[in-house]
Length: 131
Image (cartoon, rainbow, N blue to C red; front, side, top):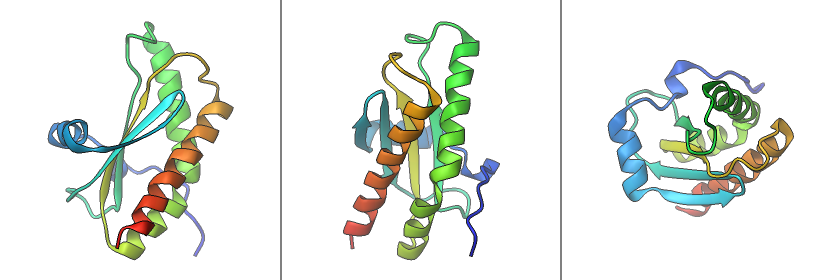
């Protein structure tokens, strides 16, 4: 089966209660300048994963800059999500994920892509380790 590199609306994290539960009891992984918070939970849709992206106004004052970073994050996720989706489908699990930019140092697409890959692989490894 060929990987679909899409990012449908059903994969977008939108519910406030999911955001709140992520911040209260989510597991964290960090790769400078990104932090990934994830938690296994029941999602409202059939998708194995819902993801949200947060770029704080504290580090990026202009909305155009925040939107640019979010576009870069969504694109890097979209191209690298396939292995994580396969692992989740194999285990029959659903997770909610939030990616937060914690520093404004270097947010070029290449850096964000590489860090996103490391973060997604670490979550995939933790999913596969848990029986």
